[in-house]
Amino acid sequence: MNSLVSLVGSGPGDPELLTIKARRLIDEADAVLHDKLPGEQIIETIPEEKREDVGKRAGGERTSQEYTNGRLVELAEDGKRVVRLKGGDPFVFGRGGEEMTYLADHGIDFEVVPGISSALAGPALAGIPTTHRDHASCVSFVTGHEDPTKDESAVDWGALAATGGTIVVLMGVGKLPDYTAALREAGMDDETPVALVERASRPDQRVVTGTLDSIADVADEEGVEPPAITVIGGVVGKRERSEAHQ
Image 1 (cartoon, rainbow, N blue to C red):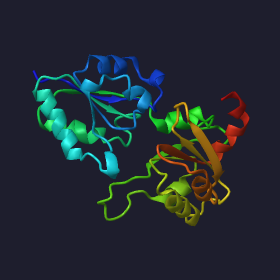
Image 2 (cartoon, rainbow, N blue to C red; image 1 turned 90 degrees about the horizontal axis):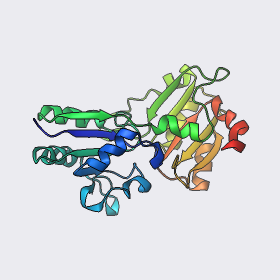
Image 3 (cartoon, helix red, strand yellow; image 1 turned 60 degrees about the horizontal axis):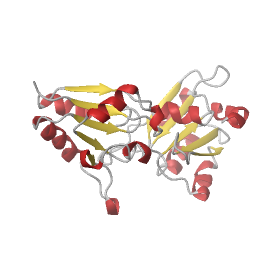
Image 4 (tube, helix red, strand yellow; image 1 turned 90 degrees about the vertical axis):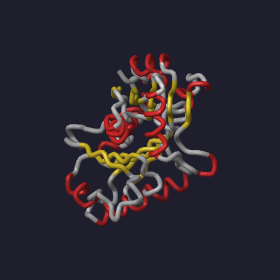
């Protein structure tokens, strides 16, 4: 029987938001392949000799997905207990689905360990409910960082604007001016409240607010950087009442 590879979600970054199973598998693993999104506090709990960074490199270079896929198979075939550690949840814009398919195609046994996605944790930790009886009966999760090889975006911002409810954009800081403009052009009110939650759950978490019309300028003035999520909709206004309790 082939060794097991565990595709593990680390949650938004706070070590106390790791699931019990995630913590156990990390501790028992022979090798942990991670990127930056699990966060320094979690990565630092893994002994250096068994962790491998497959995320960004110095100079802006990235480890290719092909390398990561091959490395998972190589380690498993070598009899190692492997954890592929991902920020948030492996299957929410985390390419966990691609890695799962690659492992299956190569006959490697695997398991998936869900994590708390920042799409839910980020707004909650900022005091923003993603749904609210008075403001939103639905919520849409959108990636702000699509595959750059696509000919055109698969995100229909016009449909999202018409749907109503809350829109949560992950990995969307760099494209913030583009999609806020697209939503406005599609008819969403310029004064729709927007919040950016930077480094959710971590000691230096920060929340920046504005409107659909102003948030791109506010983000630039405040120097907002990834990882951050964008929350768009009337629910952002509920933060004012809960802020004192955060």
